[in-house]
Image 1 (cartoon, one colour):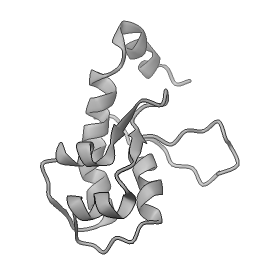
Image 2 (cartoon, rainbow, N blue to C red):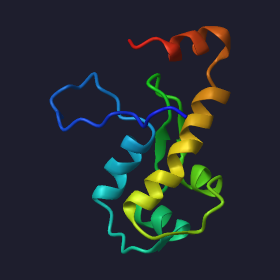
Image 3 (cartoon, rainbow, N blue to C red):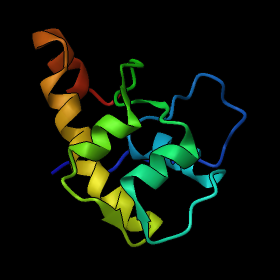
Image 4 (cartoon, rainbow, N blue to C red):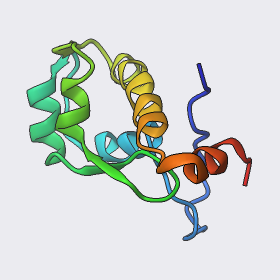
Length: 109
């Protein structure tokens, strides 16, 4: 299993794109969520944003990817992110855009 994307506290880099669980984290940080929380509560608190799942900006609605976790309640922010991480990895692999996209995903740049 691949490692979660690194998060950075450096907000000065406009070229940096948060994707996957790092992007989810930016949406839940400012949301009024009390843990444990249901998928519906999380979606309502965040406004069901489009979440980039790869560095190329491809997106999925938060509610859609939450449905794929097959988990209806999350005990904490960390529980939510841990449940979402494999789903984002699956999205990156299955929607990579063919051989070129797969090769790009293997390169560190």
